[in-house]
Length: 248
Ligand SMILES: CCCCCCCCCCCCCCCC(=O)SCCNC(=O)CCNC(=O)[C@H](O)C(C)(C)COP(=O)(O)OP(=O)(O)OC[C@H]1O[C@@H](n2cnc3c(N)ncnc32)[C@H](O)[C@@H]1OP(=O)(O)O
Image 1: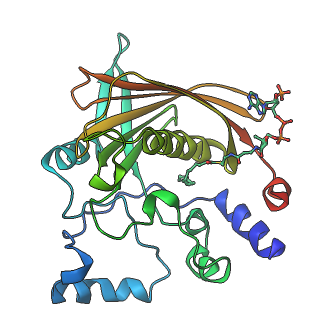
Image 2: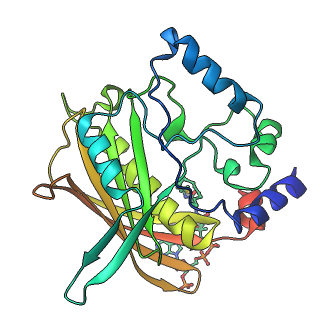
């Protein structure tokens, strides 16, 4: 077990290159999957390639799709110095193990029932629908997040714990892309205005600085046009050894 995990985490050093894959055809709910979709899904059941949850599905609303198409492979010019920022989509799997070479098979061997919290609800659109993009220099990540009906906290609005989960996921993925493996050491959140259930928001993560094993990241959640600030956060991630992960 320990040897397996050590091998996996070594693989994390050569995480799959950021993929730019064409959108999958929309999926319908599991109770009525069309035969064509089933046939299209069959090869993936036998493939060593894990399912990528960050590709569009039928639950994605217009705003989610519009922003996905905006960021996917897009280059932006910003700032007074006209700095270019090219966004690359990050794949998203239902176990972190699957980022490592051979991770699909290993995830069947190691705690095979375990699933990433944000990717464990089968009904598309019911909970966390999101896709992350990172810039080439890895200074920034942007996440388009559509909050489903199972994430209710206050009536008609998203639960604060679900927002915290997304902030941890976005900043944690950002930190992992820079220096895997990492663990969240500290997360501070200011909730400024509630997020309507079913809405699409932007979560932006910025690497502020690194100090030895520490990565300091800031994060904000806004409406998609940037006019409304929903949440601000800061996070500290610490790079850890495989031994630390095994020790728990
Ligand atoms: C291609 C893309 C790739 C993507 C691929 C992955 C994808 C995947 C996606 C999922 C993404 C989900 C992301 C979820 C991420 C979690 O949710 S992680 C789970 C929650 N976190 C935990 O369980 C962590 C529990 N805590 C610990 O294990 C340990 O306290 C820590 C944080 C590892 C630190 O322990 P340590 O390694 O012994 O280090 P320690 O010497 O105590 O501290 C190191 C430094 O950090 C500082 N520090 C430690 N804790 C704190 C603190 N709370 N406050 C301030 N400073 C602190 C220390 O003061 C020290 O500073 P210096 O003295 O070096 O200046």
